[in-house]
Image (cartoon, rainbow, N blue to C red; front, side, top):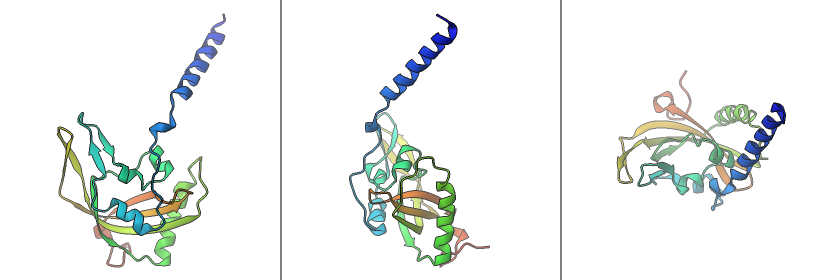
Length: 182
């Protein structure tokens, strides 16, 4: 056989093996349907958001995975805290909501596979976020909390409200109404 034929056969074999090896069971399947932002935030409030196995592998808890969109569950949740304590939910004005949604839309336009969205809800939180470290024997230790402000966009893609956008800020950047300092 020619070299090019052998290369093509090997390439097809590798591609077929990759497709057969992929399983949808590897991605977490949502169990809960959140109808309100309050329900979704309650799911994350004061609960461990990561766990560790005996071998030291750190994984997100199912409580956390329930809160994120399919895209976030397939890629990177971009949420690296062991737990959060929600101190405040800001009451955003129209200008603040529009600003958050504009940033989200710019990011969303980069996605190749976009689900239709029926609801987009921007939220700004002030939280105490706890980092963690693995101490051995499947145990995590939480460090002192860090005060941060988080912008979220909750969307409904057909599986209830889920988080599809996260942006963190230093809390000192915002005043009492959640406005960014100039």
